[in-house]
Every structure is written in C-alpha cells, then in structure tokens.
Image 1: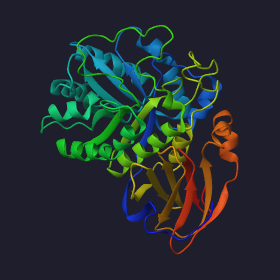
Image 2 (image 1 turned 120 degrees about the vertical axis):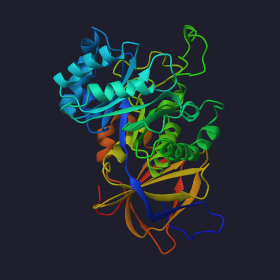
Image 3 (image 1 turned 30 degrees about the vertical axis):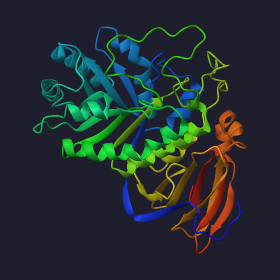
Image 4 (image 1 turned 90 degrees about the vertical axis):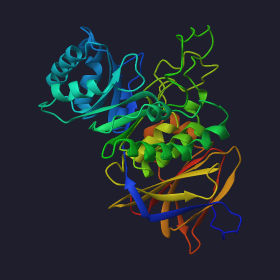
Length: 411
C-alpha cells in the first residue's frame, strides 16, 4: 500500500471526531430451521454478538423448542431479543412466557407482535407492561412491526404509549436487486432511524431483522409458493457469503449506528442466511458454493465491531458513497477504521483527518479464502504498518475489499 499525494479528483473518506454516537448492540437471528449450535459454531459466535433474536409463538412446546437457545444464552451471557407473535389470548400467552423467562433468568428485550396486525396494538403493550411489571431481570418491552419502516410510518404508535423501544425491519431489495442499487439504500437507512425517533420521543430504536433479501412481505395476499426443487429459497442470496455482502453490512452498521440506533439485529447465526456455514455445507453447492464449516466474510465485520461495543462511532464521510463506505470506531484505547470498496474495480481512496502509524489488514480476493477457512488464524495474523502523512493516507483497494485500520498500539 503506497502513500501518495492527494489528487483533487481522488475519492476521500473524512474522519470527523466531533460527530459521534454510541456503538449499538449487535445481534443475529437464531436460524429458523436449527436453533442449536455445535461446539465450534458456539465458540465462534460467543464473542461475536451481544444478543440473539428468536421468533416464537407461545404454546406448550415452547420450552423444548427454546432449550438450546436458552442454554447458549446462559453460557455466553448473550441477552435475548424475543419477537413474540401473539394471538387474541395475549394475557395468557404473556403470563406463560414470563414464567419460562423467569425460570431461566433471561434478560434482554421483548418485541410484541400481534397476529394479523402490521403494528403492535396499544392494548398488547399495556398488558405486557402489567404482567412484567415486577420481573426481576432486565427486560425492555417494545412495539413495532415485522415489516418495514413504511408500515411503521403509516401506523405510528400512539403518542401516549411508553414502550422501551420501537422496532422495524430492513432489507435493500424491495424494488431493485443489482449491487449498485443495494449500495444506494445505505444512506437511507440512517434517515429511517431519525424519523422513527420522532414518532415516540425517548424510545430506543431497534432495527430488526436486517437481511439482504425480503424476509416477511407485509403486502402479501397469499402464502409463498413452495421453492421448486434445485432452486434457492426466495430469502437466500448468494451475496450473503461474498465480499460484497461484507461491505454492504459494514455500510449498514455505519449508517444506522451514526443515526442513533440502539440495537441492530442481522441475518441468522448459521446456514445460508447466516454469517457462517454449517459443517455439512451448502444444500445446493452449485448455487451457493460456500466452504463447509467456514465463515462468510461478513463474520469478520461483526468481529471487528463487537470489540468496540460500549464505545463510540465517529463521523466518517464518504465523498463517493456509491463507491465506498467507512465505519470509524473509537474507545479509550484508540481508533479503528473500517473501509469497504463497493465496486468491482480496484479503487484509490484517501482517508483524511488522521495522522500517525496504523496497522492495516485487508479482507480481499487474496485473503478471503484464508479468512473463511481459518477465521481464527486470519484474525491472529499480523497486518502491515502504514503511516498517514499531512494529507492523510491513500490506499489502493481491490474489488469489494474491506480494510481494517487500527491506530498503532490498539487491537
């Protein structure tokens, strides 16, 4: 990586430490088809996230279905984001759920979702607040939608409601599906957070779930058609395991975090909707050619961010947001910069507002195979030292590369 003088036309990322926001809690959804994790999966997840989302209905088989998740949460100190889909028996179902959660000493958040409604009914929140009023562990209770910000905007919570948080989902493929269109959605994500904050002043914003493709279609008038044999399910996108997917994830975290989101819940833990492949490998390796037992590049984005949870996100502005995203993290120990090239070409980028020595590690076409097959080895490997001059630091980024820069002397 050579340091060169800034050219007037060179794209830049400008660090602005006067702008900041807390790093949000980062979580993943439990895989819908497999709640348990093997020992290697659990080890890789244990220090990757703050929480796990589980979608559930309350019935007599609930404890058995949740047993693996409850045990993992207890062992890892994850908190749970429970999206509970309620029927008309709201009081009975919430009372049953309280007993189960209290048994396991579960802490986290409870997202109330009413069957047949796009947004939580006010009476459901009132019932939950009454039933969990003296719950002995931390449990935020919130409202919102399993749909998009649009549904929340059209059905805003009543002004006198006092939920702990308001939730909605995000995906970049409602209207267009090419890489450039997905990148164009990134600045808009932060705008949704700022708008949602105005709906219920004082409530935290939880963006959940965040996926590459549509998970729940709030406008559907009929169930999804079965997946034809030999084809990927509608929700699966091969970019989940790609460098592009890692870069989009970085851009999404940056946009949502700097706007003030309290919590971000992405993807799933394992499988082709997750951040790592299972030991058995892809069910359709020709269409989704992942590495059995390996991780996806986006795994390393989450691993880089989680080390700064509880710290700050700093302003990091791209002059060419359709080409580059940047995420700047800062703690008492120093700063970490993450940069993504969203294009299929090598790009030259100058980072301004920084100085001194930095440790650089690239996740790109040369290192991705190693990073996916041996994530522990990749993360332990040393990077290269680069030095920012008076004009900043200029980097050449390979196609879809994600680069990490640590202020010298930090992790």
